[in-house]
Length: 125
Image (cartoon, rainbow, N blue to C red; front, side, top):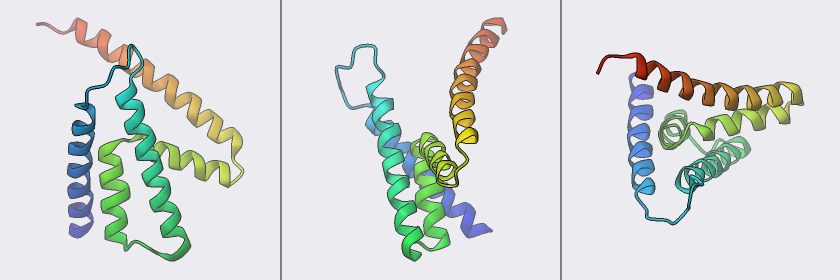
């Protein structure tokens, strides 16, 4: 259990630092959140690559998988885990569940942000 936590923690730290560094790259994106979009897509690409390599031949040890997939990809973006879970649902033929998960996650995520902003406005300064 201790090595699991260390693997996730170190990977998460690295992923979080990478996310910060990427978010500092100057780009002219207008109102479209290009940096976040880039982070989400590249995180999804990385977790997909790692998943496929591991599925076809046990490419990663359990601690390596925890470091790279749970830690680094999770620290870099939780969107990568969301994308992988939806792929697995679709692969299993659970199309309705995948569609519900996608729509519910997006709606609940945006609603959570709105509720959080409104709750903060109620707090004393």
